[in-house]
Each structure stands twice: as structure tokens, then as C-alpha cells.
Length: 189
Image (tube, rainbow, N blue to C red; front, side, top):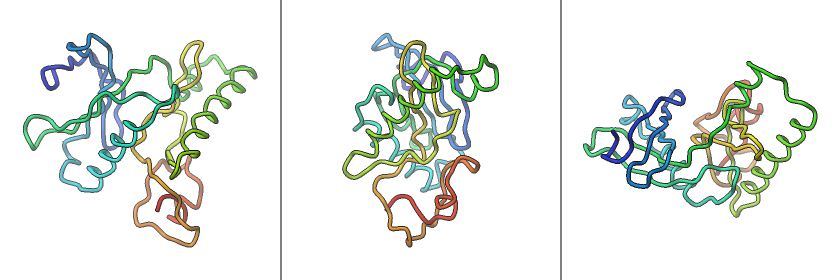
């Protein structure tokens, strides 16, 4: 039980800095996804900053292709984890679908592309624009009969940076990021 409110059902996934849990919110009687920053990263200000940025930004967004945020808090002891509670998206990741099949048909690919482009148009059309920076098959959830959902905003940033500016931190997944992002030459201000 997390914070005397979220009963853990199972682990949904584990990343390099956080894990996501399927939980039952006993107060609201609903299923939620709880993202927990791993204990080893609590002392690293960069991970804390990215996690907090993700929570604050997601709380401001309202789009059917982006999970709604319900809560963000630190565990009862100052040394415990940070938690981000959000809408549970019931679906299969695009990665899982690509691995297990069946293959997506032409119409499904078309609808998937349109759904993702709608989310990206919403994010990039904001002032200032929002960049996800980690779009990959495991961060796209396919829902039966609905548009896809884009999840894991842990690498998110706000605003554009001039092409000649260089960054000091590279976030995202190698193999899915554009070369300018990998080289720290494009991204957020």
C-alpha cells in the first residue's frame, strides 16, 4: 500500500530511473498507474528535476492521447520515493504488438499514425511547445477501438533551443532519437 491509498496490484514496467505500478486507488475506487522514482535516483538532482518536470507538465495537459495526472507526492519519509499517479491506460504497447503480433494492417497503421500526429500536434502547438523526446514503440499504448496513447514523459522539455546551442544532458533512447538530439544540438531551451 502506498500512502494508505494506492494498493499495488502488479508491476507494469520498469525503466532506468522509475517503475510503473498498476494500483487500485481505494479512496476513489479506480484503477491507476503509479510511477515511482527508483530509490537510487533520489539523491541525484537531475533525476528529481526530470521527474518533477514530468509531473508538473502532465498535470497541465488535457488530451485523450495523454494520460491524466491525479496526484504527485513524496512518500511519508523524506528519504522515500517520489510518486506520480495517473490514469491507467488499458492497452498493449506498440513494442509488444510488434513482437507478438498480429502485424498491424494498413488501416491500423494509418489510424495509429494519425492518432500519434494528433498528440504531437497538441504538444508542439502549445506556447511554448512541448517536446516528448522519447517516442518509441514501448511508449505508445494501443487501446482497443480508440486512438493510441503516448506515455512516459520522463524526458519531456518545454520550448525550442537554437540549432547552434549545445546541451549538457542527453535524454531519450538511443536508436529512437534524431542525431541532433544525441549530439545535444537541438531540443529544449
